[in-house]
Image (cartoon, rainbow, N blue to C red):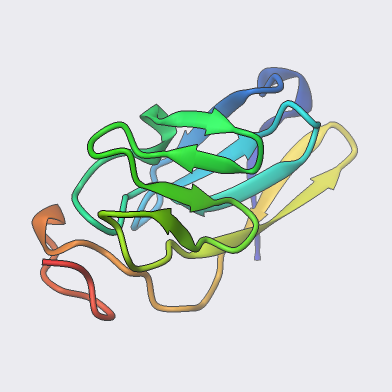
Length: 121
């Protein structure tokens, strides 16, 4: 199922758009013009990756500087060890759409949701 995110014109390069899904998801538009979507919660602690720093195809968590590869979700810099879930982005006409992954998210225990799929404590 495709979820409409926003119009292409509403998400400039280098910016992020956060969706209040359960758990929240963020869509990034890189400086190179690519679109990526990942879970918005850092797997180390409850921090919004939409508030982080976008560098190429990676986002740095604003809390403890873990970096996540937007293409794979892999945590490339500690303290985060577990990957974030990635989602498919589809562009139809002038609208950005999201197809949510059916994989189990790696949510941190500190997010108040308890340990999920090996979430960090």
